[in-house]
Length: 231
Image (cartoon, rainbow, N blue to C red; front, side):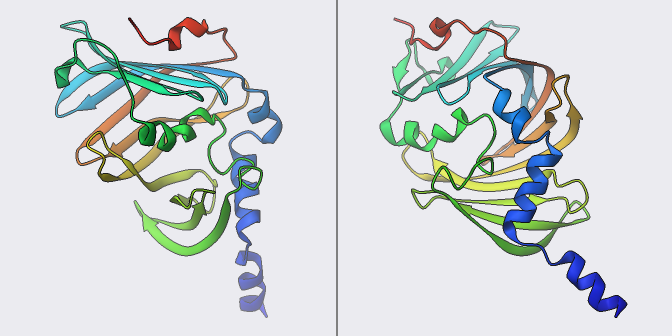
């Protein structure tokens, strides 16, 4: 009877896992109150440390600035509901260029501050349980999300905290080829508004990129001109 009771406790539906995740990171009311986010931190790639700033207006615009402090050279990427643009001096760009439509479409998820699991049904997505898998010694719960375009993202959640420890998805690279992205999340901290943020993110896109967040601000006014493509 004890074994049967234990099995019953651990038999959760996909929706129950999603709901526990949303509650763990602050709850739907807190997430819904977030209109803007500004982040500051550092990116480490190939042994080089860059400063990083992110500006986001929920559902409308997202911009990332990655700067090499010694040379004051910045890589800029911006996505809005209407399009996107990029400026990468390391790729030989001397002026900002419009982003290809397929990349803009693939990056629309960046506009969703609450993440893909937040109100996933309203976005036309589906979620299903996909078993368990060990991530850094934790027997995670796997959730497979499929959006309305058919794009899949696999999430690995800690069964105790219900934080996301790992996510796997695919997108389109600058050359038009499919690129698999694996992201690991750690150092979760509750911010002043009650929203829980992973202050360390490690992304693998063919090379490892470590993102350490130093500062997070919510609902700070952002000038829309920040998202305009330089001329």
